[in-house]
Image 1 (cartoon, rainbow, N blue to C red):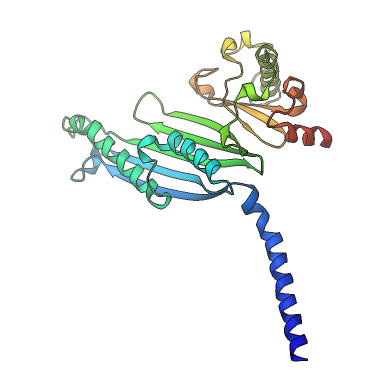
Image 2 (image 1 turned 180 degrees about the horizontal axis):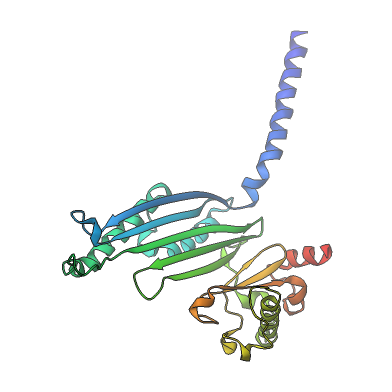
Length: 286
């Protein structure tokens, strides 16, 4: 009887372990695992007189830390770290990376402005107040594609701050970036350009906060610059092109995002392109 009871217990534990393995295995084996790291700091130009200026630093970064294929992970980590921080921070561990980067930003700020700070007087009312906000964030993250965005806000006291968002879409079979020409057929640019222009014009005219635009000749947009720019992110339903300030319009217009549902562009996409599974699913759901 005791032997039977022991066998039942062992069988029950085994079944439980199998269930736990099935439930928790899939996210860790089929997609990139990221971890968030954040840091906020303020570096004063002069510790003796904090009114001369300061650098405000805000960092909020999702970093890839785990994946089933180490070579793929290493390649993605290298590209993302380089784009975020530059080559010199490649060897630092994740848990101290932001501290080292913030320290370097602070050192450069003081070094670059030290001579000017000596000329500041109480009457001049000058202050070298700068700020840097850097964000790295994961977007689409499934078993095939990992999309990642970098948002950078820099205010070094010029006419206005500079804000940019750049995107990187990785194919998880090899860890390489997916470029436009891997998605679209040869000679795609003229037609895709017209699709982007028409979609943007339609979006603007459906926005109640902006006046109606007959065509881009009657707008502030730089018509010749509105075209595929390689800066896009991918989701289940669409490819989203992002144009940063100054790229297709004056600074005050800000960032422009053009969302292209797959149903608008699937005829321009190569057979067996890296997004084909997303396109097929999206078209079948419509």
